[in-house]
Length: 286
Length: 286
Image (cartoon, rainbow over all chains, first blue to last red; front, side, top):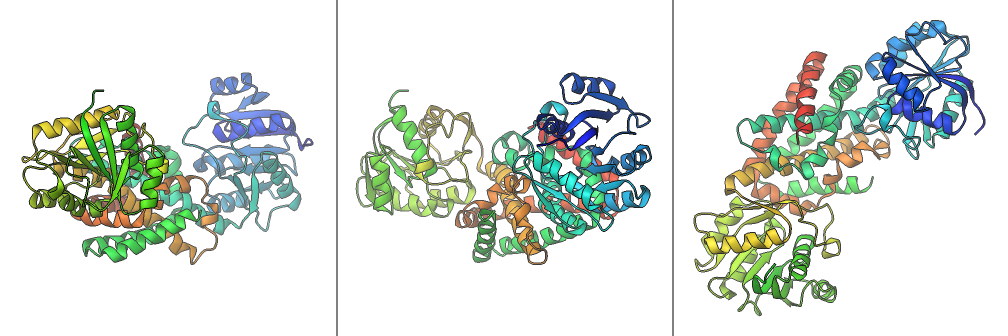
């Protein structure tokens, strides 16, 4: 693919930022990538690994000729970063992010940054429970969905540019309004995390009354609760930022669980079988 | 390993029964394996695949010289099979099963079969969401736990023999009382299945109000809900047979979920982070 940018800044060179840096290098999408972060040792490692060309600590320097800023930090910090970065950019520059919550982030950023900087919300639906650029790879986004959530304020040219970036990464780019994105992510990602965290905690609670339960959990339970090993601070922030929609999905889930519990309590095998079948068929349809 | 049996009967030549047949053949643990089932076509396929030497439909014939019967059928049918088989066996024969619920099964079987037939409850903690002997392999049980649940009525010699069978399969054999087994399985297997079924159904419910949610569920949701594709009839029977203990684990889970929901509702990031961290640490400890 042809060059899209002269100078890209990646804020937070972790799993996502690092993988995107690899894509940019592989596809020669920019002349220069500057990494921004807090830890010079980590950034030096990323530089010597060839992910970035140079790096800065803090936003005081090097941003004046940047075309595109990719914020790859956790959702709890994206607004702050964007607001701090924007005044250093030249007019027409683009900021995009990779956060899994969009509503609060975009409304706050659009309120606080200058109109001549364009923010395009992005969310590559990729990643593992690993983190850090050491786990990064250029193939992370291949055949995955990347959602972009332009608003009425978004410039079409900026949207097209960000879209090309993700297409170069091998993603299927889908445009979605902010509300729909946050509702879908609450259902298929945030709710399962809340459930997995709660499930592990419930077993820990039982552990206190019955010995050694966890010892037998090597098989299915371990697979099922893999996502419960995710970063607590990141998930605290996601939960806070998509609170209302997660609460709505929790209501749906609790109703569904109550229905099953009632059937179980009543020994109603017919209803249980129907509930399990409904779920099995839906799951097989994915 | 030396020969343990002259003649083994496997009732239900599916994933577990078929895999155990492969172990018995590989380790030359018996001269003859007879498969019992309902479908002559399937049994003929298992025979021509070399899993069993011959087969019978119904229990009227061929059981008189059998040393060991392995019941590999779903939990809902184990009691019925054992009670039908027992009168055809010679004194001293052993019956064992592979069901994931033990309490109800063992108490009903011990009540109904002759004292000179020994029933040893077994539960290899292995298996996938696949079923059928086509998915079977001799390595299925390797390095997995196999729980045996002898009771006061169990003969020590019979227990030792069944234990040798599972050791030959590469399993770590653990003896456990029936109550403990059913409590642990409720927590680490039955509860997660109830939760996964309910989670998928909740998303189906949301689907009716918000379009296309499932379409975006290719990643984490798909992995997380893999077990929701399990067989509805099998899980209806497990739920019915371990009802009380599953209801207890559901209470623990619902309390845990309520705690998180309250924190979310209150926007209490500190409590959420603590809950997520507790879960993360416990999960990492597995």
